[in-house]
Image (cartoon, rainbow, N blue to C red; front, side, top):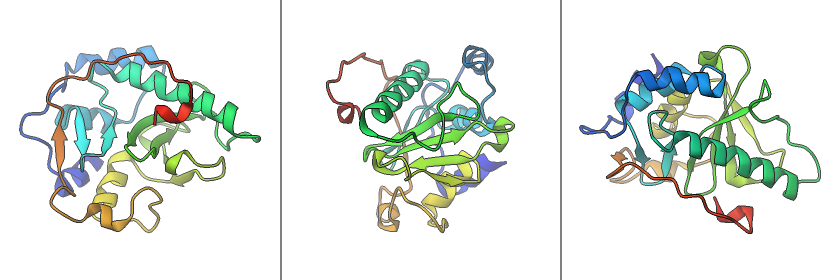
Length: 196
């Protein structure tokens, strides 16, 4: 299972937060009207809410803020694409299928998505470095946790998000759980760059 690859590289915290209840998974999939990759479920159950290297966040499906973060990310991307690009991006957005569905981001405006084609456990990862142009998306045919494990162990031949130096040092392979559940706050932005 792909989650085991990640666990070998970055162990989960001893006391994760927001790791259930397990029944939330089914209701979340029903609300989104789609299945989700099983490694996201396993990630949420084992890691909970928090950040890798104090910068990278995988959206935890068991977090109270999950749907807020999910919907906000889609809204911001839609607004960004409409306001910034003269041409359409190469992918449509969820709920269109296949479409981009968000699963993570970092503090450098990089975002991580799935392309919802085929069965959820076969969805490829799509990376969008620095919210740059419509041609800058990078598709990787691997699972979310395989991508994360390979990124942290510097085994990717193509990683447009983080240079190798990002994964060197004492904080490079740590997942730090949030101290308490995140409470979403709805903010109004005058510029889409403010959200990233």
